Length: 238
Image 1 (cartoon, rainbow, N blue to C red):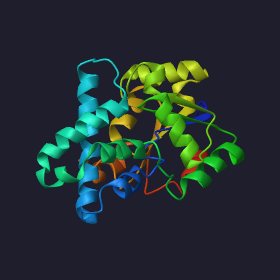
Image 2 (image 1 turned 120 degrees about the horizontal axis):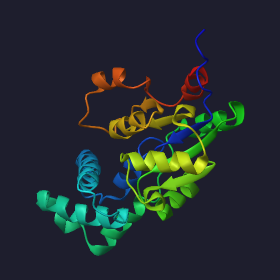
Image 3 (image 1 turned 180 degrees about the horizontal axis):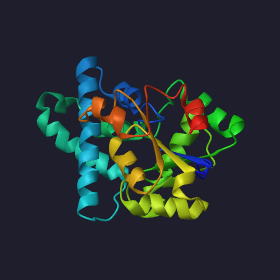
């Protein structure tokens, strides 16, 4: 007789992109002299370069860097490729843009999904995100989302998708990999969680994973969802 599947006890959430709409915050602060479609493309490229930059740091086993510092010099590099925009970016504007990353609203359906997961399913919900602890605290306060605890790469001393990021978090909350679902809008993150033995749920967000093949991702993870509306029910089925 086959043994029953392990009971899910917790959900690990990636934060920016997955739970939070970083795009509207950043575009809202970009100078209005830039047409909105161009501002959107600029923001998406800034975000894309951040992922490439961080992946390279993980590959080279470099020490963690404050995300504000990373975003600042990536912005300066990006402006080299957008010479027509440079005149709009004084020190004040650059400062407001970095601050915008600390003030991101939740996607519309996320609050209800997390509330159901915690209150109706009785599961623990944790943030497991790259970035500083101050960033994560600011984002929780601004978005109004409620979690059992926040784990940042700064706190853990390692970036996702390094195996240690998932292993350390599991050790701290005293859970086995098979008792946890990782929810993210980033394939690299879920691939790391898969290797750690977790179940994986991909959340599609048009703002993220712009270089990934979505058709491939639909079969790569345990579940692929267009948003979080049905997430509690899907987790209950798992």
